[in-house]
Image (cartoon, rainbow, N blue to C red; front, side, top):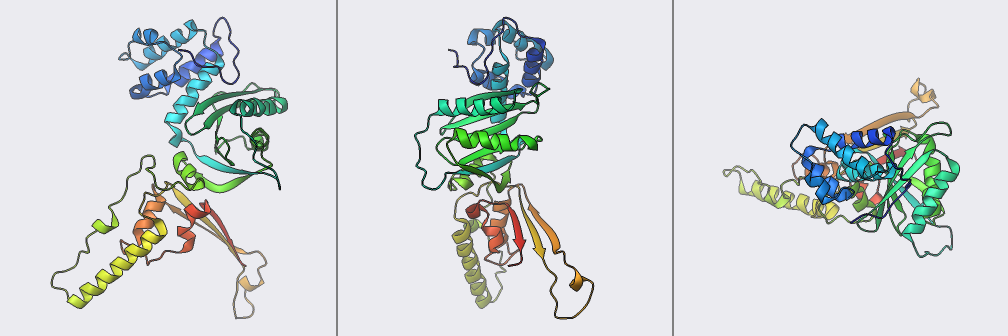
Length: 353
């Protein structure tokens, strides 16, 4: 069973050295434990071909055998790009993802969406503006499409080893992009997304994470689910009070009442479901120096005072959720910490009113 072609499909009689090297480097980065799964998902090599390969040999030899099979099948650059998309889907947490939100103009109605039309329009816009660019697509679950873009310049061929990725969910205003070193191409990418999806404007949200599913849950308000590599903390109701049995009964009652209040407040704020996974929240403060005293160096300063505070954790929202029950912070926490999922932000700028 063969897949339908996607992206820039130009088949040659023989695979040139550039494409062969692209295949070699793409296959080489696939862990041996995932090799068969990813190759079967790719569905380019037949079952019979895969059975001829010794997957227990040294990885360099295995890669060479697989590249030869790709050459036999007259694989194209797009076939290699599609394999790279699948690898990236398996290892999406290795990238940092930004979120873009689109909007329609006043009075614009929601149009019927056609995925094939979206792909065609998206690629045409990029090709029209930039000669050297390759674009590949792979459909995914939940009406999503993964887009791989290898950027070139007017004088250089596309760099296949530093692609940008876009994940777009059809008929929604949201797109998720892997952070790219080529910031100069962001306006063009935004234009392609906006026009192809029939929106009017696009803005970058103050939201970023390595965990794509968590970003999706935040913007789509889908919190009550299990997130990738989530290690939930001990449920609050299972935490021991740790009280001395000889302690005054009035103190025990007061502590128990306070603990129940903290649990109630924490559950009202965070809910009783696993939190989306973010690694940090960053706050930039800008404020003018204020003092009742006259004079002084700071009083004459026209520039605002600036301060940056960054909270980091392997699972920030779960860590914040556990602060008050652990007795580390008072309940409720500051709204600046608890508003992250509802506001869809983990970058904040705080200025004087």
